[in-house]
Each structure stands twice: as C-alpha cells, then as structure tokens.
Image (cartoon, rainbow, N blue to C red; front, top):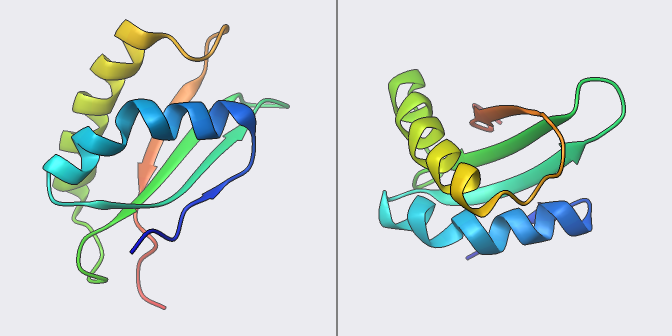
Length: 89
C-alpha cells in the first residue's frame, strides 16, 4: 500500500523514475519532498514492513537512487539527496 506524499511536480516525476528500483530492493516509498528554497534538498523517505530502515540500507538506497537520478536528470540544478526512514512512531 502506498502512502506517498509528493509535494511538487518534481517529486511526482522522481517517484516515477525511482519507485520500481526502491521496491525491487524491498522498500516502500513513504514520502518524496523537494525543497527548492534554501538547501535544494530532495528527501526520499522509505520504510520496510513498517519496521524502519537501517543506516546501511539508507546508504545502499542512496547509491542506487543517485545513479538513477544522474542518468534521468529530473532536477535542473544542483541538489542534495537525502534518504531517510520514518523511524519509530
């Protein structure tokens, strides 16, 4: 079940580009948020079976997603990619 909150057209485009790769690794996208004001940060929040995600898993997802985004180039300017987990409720 998808709980995606995409805050912009860029976020929705990123979702289309990376969703299958993230799901193939066994994770679910919880939220994609692009902040283009101060830090130009693309945040992708992922979860696995509602149990959270280890830091090492975030690093693995980051490496994979970064390569996919480099090829598809959905954002016209430099930005920071942040992969995170919703953590404990």
